[in-house]
Length: 625
Image (cartoon, rainbow, N blue to C red; front, top):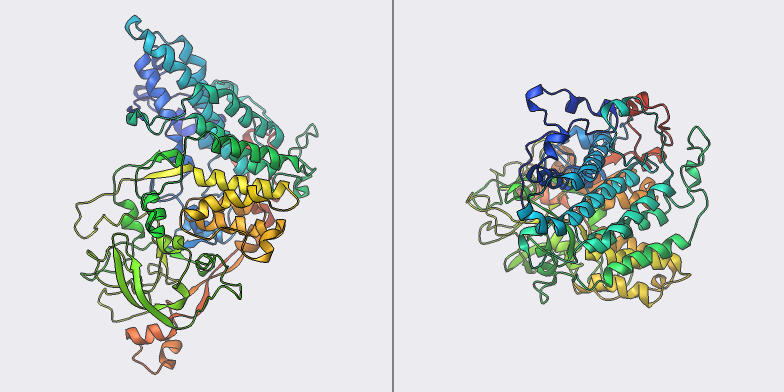
């Protein structure tokens, strides 16, 4: 997308005055009025470009954009931020509230709704020089469609976060906002609004910007249809489809905000919407290295890819990802990262064997005991390894592309030793599990996904160039599989074919495989697990377990890892030097508790910020808050 520097402040950009304070409290020299902006096509175009900033500010919680933001994956059963950020801790402890929620984005979402409203209300009246009239005659309708998409996108964020929310698409002045008493629209109203907007704008949007690379990242017809499909998927899911837990959440006039009757047809609507994206024929699963299933998947996450990615967030050229997530050894042969995330054993165990059987299935061949030697793809080449636990033998290729583990290797030409996560007190930096409280890898696993093997942190002269796929084709396949499975009495070839398209990219065998795959309930578990491993660390799991209403089972209770932080008594019991690598390794492969999480029924939806309710008494609070 063409880059424009935004040099203005939209006055009254928020919906509610309480959310506007930081925008209204500016010195007069910084204020640029709407009239100033929309009196010139160049500044009006900057207002349009500013809308795209929403994708980096309110959908992505990790260091790719802002290192101070909480990481959504670390608020799930995927991993823990072992730097013990208060942002993640308060969520994981269940201690967040309507006055203290580090994940809250209510004000930000409505800021972008407001900005889109202002743009749409003014763009048709902007003076255009005669010499540019022909160009803008074709571009302004696209700008308007993109602004409507971004407004619908923000309402989707509000919907999946809070459920029923006010729909306001008039550019209220700050004085109007101050006096407004605005009730929440029902979930049905919000879903209908988002999907109708997507339908209305899709014909005005191009299918692709493949022939104009400078505009990659702009909104396409596929993005509009994919947002509709995602919205309908959520609408059909248990959280929003006949959830009687929310029966008491009503407006003052008695309006029921959450549907109380289950509607199976919602699954069909969602299936048809996902199928519409698939039928465009514009997108294809990224397969840069089909003969190597690990690399075939891994490259998607450290390249600028637009063939599978339906809606990309184009990230800057940095080494932030590698710096934050690569293992943190500091000897000359180590990676020199910060190893910020400790991955839980729960996620490791979710990866099937490469024969397609879950590791819990007696026919899987899974054996947690003993070790093996062979070769592993280190990101650049197949590299010999030895003494690797049999836990990591013959797993789904996505496991090797996503998670670092004991005796794994990474870009071996630059980091020429195996990764060592076992406790090792006298390691002189030759360990990736430093014995430092609060900063070392706690579980024996780090993130691998997203890191570019071509970035050498020790050399200091290389950067990564990647996009974050806000929506990608694999999601549409898995959406279609899920929605058809839920709509039908039992899975059919439509369900299997859709999920197998995703599995085939990494050479995983097609379903069905085990007997339960032939049932709705069994296939539901398969699809949920497929989403878990396909979208690991992509901010999908946080929302999926909520819409499925399984978070009380998976995000509540003890999370586990390997014994990377043994007690002195455990080390002493080995009979070895307690400071030695041998002692740490002797007790390492024990699965132990790492953190206890709290997830209560009220946590399925966020609380509306109390500051907003204090301003607008018509805003009824969500369940349990």
